[in-house]
Length: 269
Image (cartoon, rainbow, N blue to C red; front, side, top):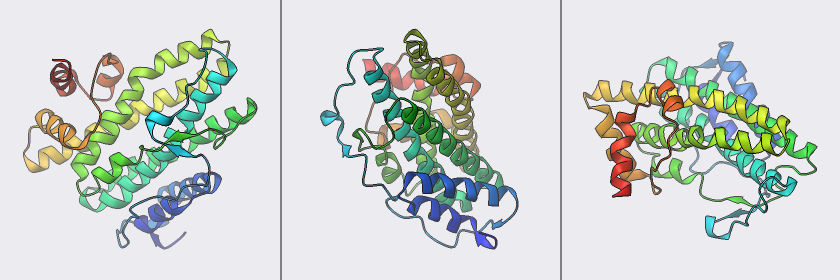
C-alpha cells in the first residue's frame, strides 16, 4: 500500500465484501497510515454502498426474529450477532468518514477516524470469534438492513455525519452497553462481558472524536454547536433520541447534557 493515498486505502476497505478480508484491509490501512505509507490526499471518491457478504440476510427491523429467552445461549448468540453486525458496518462508517470528509479537516481528523476504524475491525473480530466459540458465527443469523442509512443520509455533509453517527448512534451504545454487560455476567458469560466492556471503553473515545470534530466544524463556521446538533439530528436522523442516558459516559466523551436533553424533552412531550 506504500505510495497510495489515504482516500484510496479507505475506498479499498469499503469495497471489501468478505468480513475477514475487510478486517485485514482495515488493519493494513491503519498500519500504513501510522507508518507514513499513505499520502494525505483525497483523489478518489468513496462508493455509495460498501461491499457486503452474501450472508447475513439483511432484513428490515419489523422482520427481525425475536431473540428468545433472556440469558439463554440462543439469546446471547442472537445479541452478540446483532452487535457483530453493528461493528462490521462501523468499520465502513469510520473509513468512509476519513475518506469522504478528511480533506475538509486537519490531518488529526484522519488520525482519529482511521484509529476508530481499526478499533471497529478489532471489535468485530472479537465478537465473531466469540460467536464461533459458542457454535455460531457472523452470517449465521439475519441482521438489521438499515445501519448504512445514516451514512447515505449524510453523505453530503460532514457536520451532519458527525452529529448522527458518533454523537447519536454510537452514543446510544454507551447508554445500553452497561446493562448488556450485566446480563451477560448474570448468565455466567464472563467472556462475552469482557469483550463488551472493551468495546464500551473504546466507544467513549469514538464518541469523543465525533464531538471534538463536530465542535471544531461549528467553531470554524461560527455556529453554536448544541443548537446546530439538534437541528441536524432532527433533519437527518429517522429515529428518536430518548432516555435513559448514560450521562457519565457521554460527559466523558464531551457530549454534555446541553446537547441532547432539550431534544429528548421534545421527543417525550
